[in-house]
Length: 385
Image 1 (cartoon, rainbow, N blue to C red):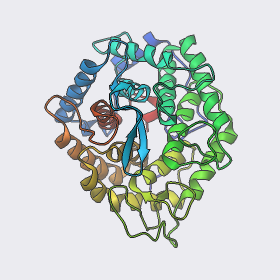
Image 2: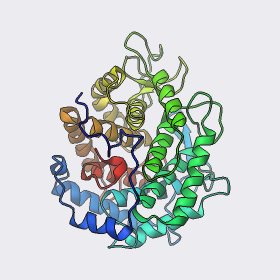
Image 3: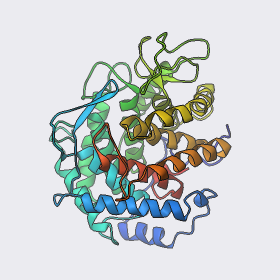
Image 4: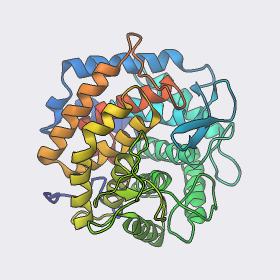
């Protein structure tokens, strides 16, 4: 794996601070920007058209209140347990949808998607509780982290004092609710941790710290240590269970465990989450990362074949994996993106949406799919190389 030559503005640098700029300055920079990235060609005309259809679908399905209504729930083994049998305003999906618009270079109050982003922002802000928890209709720490990430990226563009106030409180909630293991779980202040929720919190903290929000260094170190303890070394097995179904149990070195337990799954999505967390914490060269990427290379096609009908495993797996591979760069990144792009283009429906047969719903699938396809454009600092 090639070490990044200039890590300062990248996902891998937790110590960098991106100075907030005025929205007009940011907009002008984006509108006039000439990208020199060698990866721009990966977003070809067919991919751009698919992204645009997806964003149009999201715009059409946004509620007047600014939210996207989906099934609010949580993972239960390989299923999705809902808090209600009908779609409800979903702050996590709303944040992800807005992040996807930002990832395409669209800005609040500017252009054809400006009003969509602004309405989404107002809704996310309205979900902030007095203690800093961003939640609605029973949503949990996943949604809180996505909302925090969205607010951090918005604050970096606008320097809006209202956004800053809510963002600082949401960051404080993440920091204070980190447990003794060094991670996070579905609800604040839980005693146990899991990898998938931990990576969301670390990425949110990294983005917030980059725009000048205080994040204690000890919080990041403790999360990094948790991730290292979750890694399956080459001389051990993640689980003795033989099952390798949709959420299958891995048994190879290089994978990452769901929790700090012997009898727990170790999978492609969790391994992508582990690598992304280590990059976000400033770690590039550990042998654990190389082993993890090799494991992901071996598991990629099997994982896609099992999940491409729109299970939430597919989307959250590639949400993490695309970041891990993108920061890695080189042939591994190009092979990975060619595969995931091909899959996503085949999966898109005629109305522009992406299916999500188990999970919140098509707005979730569409938000994550369009975000993945736009990673090479490098518009958002959190997703820049």
